[in-house]
Length: 332
Picture: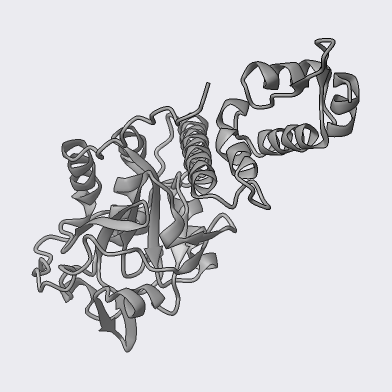
């Protein structure tokens, strides 16, 4: 068939067909008179290229799929090289999503700062009072937690296949956070002004300080992103509604994760303790990359300085870059 007919059947323009041919992705036969003759196989290849383009795979990187069909496979993604191209495209898309999310978070932070500039507030829209100051300040002589080795097993292990709800109404799977570093600070519970904390809270090593810790991650959020953190989450066993109030009250530019059943502790051995008969997470922070726990901060003390500790670690331990991609054999 002629190029116009092949383009019509494939749902593209003749210009697109010529471009694919110039890249060597399709090679129509030549008739005796010199004209090109396009076959049903050529139309199938053009359709495959177009379908992959819609998924965000550039035309120049469709070669593995076409080679797979040429090798006799029923589907263009039956070959390992095709699966590798899928993974590359997913990784690149994930990085773009994370970059956009970081920009969105920065805009939210700037919005809060601009809207309340010049006012004496703790969270956006609220004037600091004695109760707020009590929650933001740490009392003197807090007992420091000891390193009991309860987190020694975490670095280097796979992140658990657990899906948790966020305060933004989304679901996050911990083993599918992508190739960029995700910082998750895990804490016991966040208090509210005017609400009693568990009895003896200040005497439990490592218990007090969840609000100052969250404010620290808020205040250093942009620096953490610039140091290589793709995402930041807080995580506790409090429900999403409770955490949403905290996000709003403190003006946090990131989401909180809720794990009310402490599934992360039960499946991955995170340390916990009991207060007033309630089981709670001990304070620690995980750095997850490519589905692996890269680093664990434990114990965490003092909590109001912990965001700076994480920031220093990120700066001192830049992620190892992936090797540059090399051209595949047969690519023009």
